[in-house]
Length: 367
Ligand code: UD1
Image 1: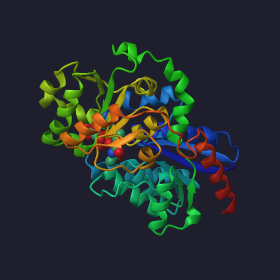
Image 2 (image 1 turned 30 degrees about the vertical axis):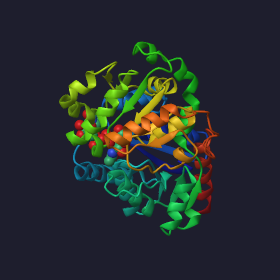
Image 3 (image 1 turned 30 degrees about the horizontal axis):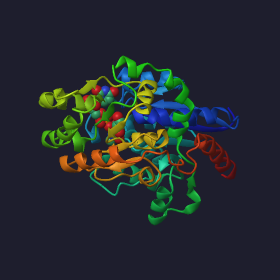
Image 4 (image 1 turned 135 degrees about the vertical axis):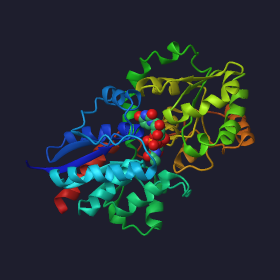
């Protein structure tokens, strides 16, 4: 078959909304041919299949079925099962997104076979090497040939690391492509009504970073100021599977006031509706900092740092740290602040994936 053959990789929940517009943009170019590999890092219906259904992502051609495990086990399993796929399919390019273990493992398997890698969402740096994602980002960017960047800070970081500027492409944000394409559909979700809250009068919480949820004392320190906030407004808390087990020890905090209300993980459209109508979003996710920036919804990030500084300079995001006092103070400041929508970051316009597909075609012709 003719055309440049790309193997696209998706493994975990935050990858799915990023790969969707890239696959669509590549499908629109006759010069590009795509194969989709799901590593199986996330496998629950609510963490995976639901996103494929809602975002109309084509059924994966191959599912590696790696599942959960320690970092070494999970990364090793992806490496081991992805290599034979590459040997059989012999693509011209492997395209990875984000910063999860599947991103790193598939990049490594490809470059070792001499297959070039394109990294979507390259260059982001928290400068915190205790975060597993930071290691995944640094290694993937070092070995990738095409680096597609969402924000200026990413370009500066890559240049500072000595990466050839010819490999760096500032293209915008594919996660925002998906958000803009699904805003109308999300407005028709009944998630807010179903969850029994009132638009503009509730908060949304997500927590899943190991540093925040794995140590009971840290999680308690985060939940205490949130339980105080729950006296003034309900907090809807879609719970990630890794966090669920950790919550049992904190039942009393969850029950105070209007309550922090744990619910099962939501699909893409329901969650987008829930964020859009919230008074406040509290999170340790990377992507949610970006989504609230575009939605113009106030965001308090429960982390010491962010690899997405544009969400602070151009957006609605504030860093609270992970200690009770900082979270308490940041919630107060945020609720008192003016939330007039700011202009979106440059190139977060819904067309990032089209720029990526174009750049890949140009690269393919020059080889
Ligand atoms: C992974 C990513 C993280 C991303 C997050 C989004 C890495 C290093 N981390 O973290 O960057 O923000 O996904 O969700 O790649 N589990 C299930 N069902 C699933 C998936 C996971 O029950 O479908 C449970 C398992 O107990 C598993 C745990 O969640 O051990 C953690 O899953 P894992 O893929 O290791 O990392 P995440 O915390 O999800």
